[in-house]
Length: 279
View 1: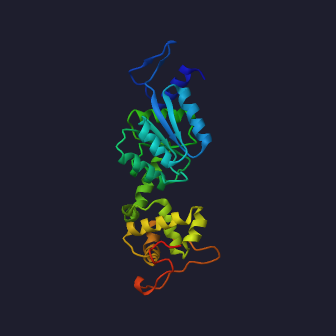
View 2: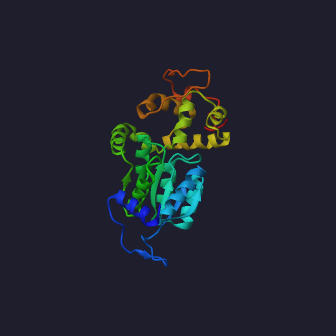
View 3: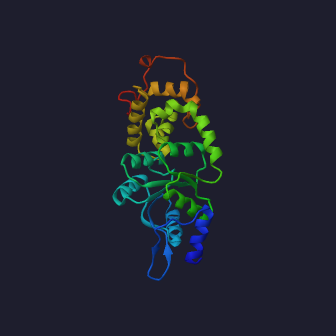
């Protein structure tokens, strides 16, 4: 597609004209101000496709790529781009964590979550963490470009058809306010479920494909956030309250999870209670 045709298609889909302050190139082309962009996604194929699509449009310049959340935070802090494209479900970090870190840094960068997940919970979490947009990867390229241009222009943009999902998520999450206030990450929630199912740190590490030492750190953090002192308390909290907040215990392979009799944490100790994190 020719430059002018591609640009006209993208802006036409947005239902608006290109912004002012046009840049005149030496060969006579006229373009909008270029938005410096960082792409954060653990899929190399998507990063390359996003780069090709955006730079071919003439209105975006990809100045950096990151394959992990931590790398993306570092890159954005260093380059201070106009726009960050963020996959919400990264392998190393929860997308909401990345968003909060970027917002806490005070960067003026606009952040658009571009993801394959249409889960209402992800949508709600992303917006609460400070996303300027939540867009879907299966969007037609010209339409996606138009949406990203609206984000750069200062609008909050939802992907097509996501308005109903947002409304449903807000309604359902009213029962999850305590969990939200606790600030548990998706990883911590997954570990809490397994603790309630009686899993050891070693088993949890195997299930989630992470190091056992990493599990221990997560356990300490989730206990602190929930203001609990032991794994027994955490298991009881999950079984007594978690079901109302979208959590249910996950049992070890070959076992079944049963709701325990009401007990006082001081009366019974799990083998890993010594410091709340032993394997």
